Image 1 (cartoon, chains in turn yellow, orange):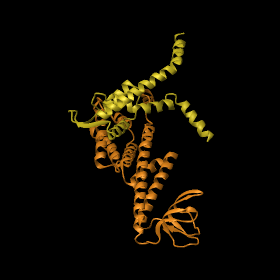
Image 2 (image 1 turned 45 degrees about the vertical axis):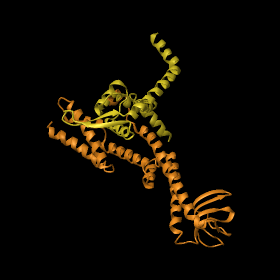
Image 3 (image 1 turned 135 degrees about the vertical axis):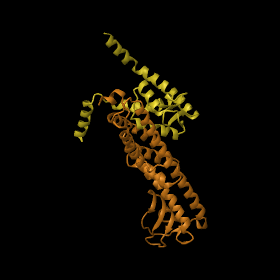
Image 4 (image 1 turned 120 degrees about the vertical axis):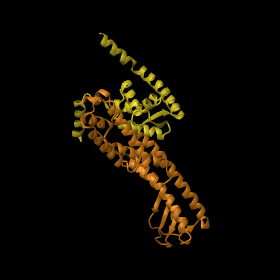
Amino acid sequence: MLYMVFKKTRSHEERPDQSEPWEGQLRKGTLEMAILAILWKKRLYGLEILRVLESSSSLCILEGTLYLILNRLKAASVVDSEWVDAGSGHPRKYYRLTPAGEERLSKMAEFWSEFSAELDQLIGPISSRKEFTNAK
Amino acid sequence: MPSDSIAQAIDRYLETLRKHCARVSLAEADEFVGEIRSHIMDRISAEDNPTPETVNAILQRVGDPKQLAARLVAQTEIRRAARSLSPWTILRGILRFAMKGVAGAVSFLITAAAYGCAAVCALVIVLKPVLPHRIGLWLGRAHTLTLGYWDGEIVNSQLYGISLRHDPVNFVIGTLGPASGPVRDLAGSHIYVIAALAGAAFFAVATLFGRWVISKLSLRKFRGSLNTATPVNARYAG
């Protein structure tokens, strides 16, 4: 058992490029909000959503997983979809927020703003100390 | 690379995906596979000169088709269970969580017990006309109240069904074991109404609780399953 714990710790140390578990948890928790935010007042298909996700945040998922998330959001009536043949040679499925989705996203964004502002206050002294150290 | 071998690689991938989506409705499987196909085509068309390596890399980035299908099936079954009225579907939905955690296991037992009580009530209604002197709401020794079957004995009598005893406090589906003493039927012909109301209440509680548990646990499981969320630089590092 102890060996397993040791091995787990070692394997994490050996892969410094991997994110810490708490970072992963944080990303997972915000992924749904990020996808909904990307669809705010826009109609996009899967790959477009993925590109925005990759370019404007460090949130990244296995590409097939995005469609599972969208499938789940659609089942929850938060997003709506339609197949469009836009002359690309194959049809694409476009997603957009439903009114319920817009309302949910507004609530999420409001909560996130308050939550992150509170956290910013908490970590403020640490960040300013780091900036001071870097300046030196 | 000839374009037909690219097409073969894509077809193989999509066939595997479809094959493992068998437990999802045809329409939903079609929709999902079609969307993955569209995504792959978009990725390939963005390449100037697609090679076997680039196509394989694209398919790898989409994910293992078996795992994707398994997650779609789990997601669909859980969603179906969360809206279902069928005890079997709901219990099967909770069983998925029961295998993975204490909360799921406890919820499964509670739901199964409530459905068990509803089943006993239904049996009482069905069996009363057949065994009129054996089926009832029985008050036995030590104020034990049992809805169900009495074997007709006074000494070492057995009562089967849903039993309630206040000292020590016991709630049992099945039997509390042999006991001696007089047994009295409290309900008489009102047993039908009592069993119907109790059965409906147990069924409603089991269904509502089961569906609530599935919705709560599925959200937790879903967020936990997004285990591939890693930074972009980390994903391409290997």
